[in-house]
Length: 278
Image (tube, rainbow, N blue to C red; front, side, top):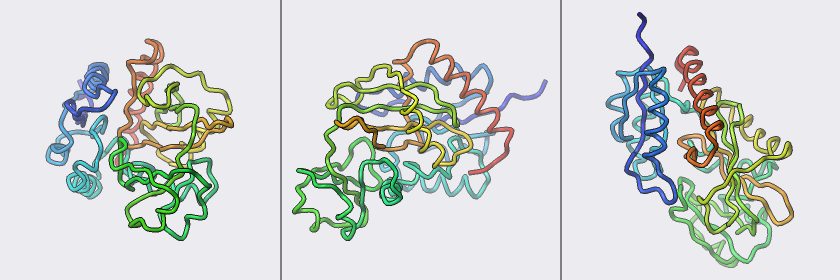
């Protein structure tokens, strides 16, 4: 009988995520994936040392990389050098590589919250009472501050991004496996980002989200497109999470949750059959 594929599943079960339960989600997912794969869980700091023993590494709820950037860089370098299969593949162009894609998307005219990373580009930002200043490598609002426009020229540019503070109606997230839409959730109260409810997207909403999935060109993997609905009804991209997006699977229907696991399982099989590409 042929051996089943083996997966090293990277997660920080104890990470204190605000409004989210990393451990519960990954215990659920690994319990379901065991029907098709041999699985071992490990902390992100242990992944580089263990990954050679498995057919693939699955990076899931591993916490903000800025807490262990040196170790993550070493993991990435080793995986690339050894041809290790990593899911999501490490050539993602969005949050996986930091948030430098937001100024690039702004300059290219995509529907994103206007973002700049150079003082000479401040004229690309609309007028606002306040501006959000965040680290290029930020996550979970770590390092986020708000400043008035007359302070923007005095900021230490290089590792920061600047955006207008957007008055939005709500935030909404679209969840994908590979290029297949799975479900959407939204936060009706802008002050409670992780109090989410099911959301029925319109065709226009899905066209919006899909353009960023297509832009990222990941052949396989799980992605979350985070957007905000402005007061005039438009959607603007907040971020494209392509490294370790939390999925809020406890908030979707049993049918949607089962469909997600089925699609993820198929995606992993196809990924393993396709051969290494990090």
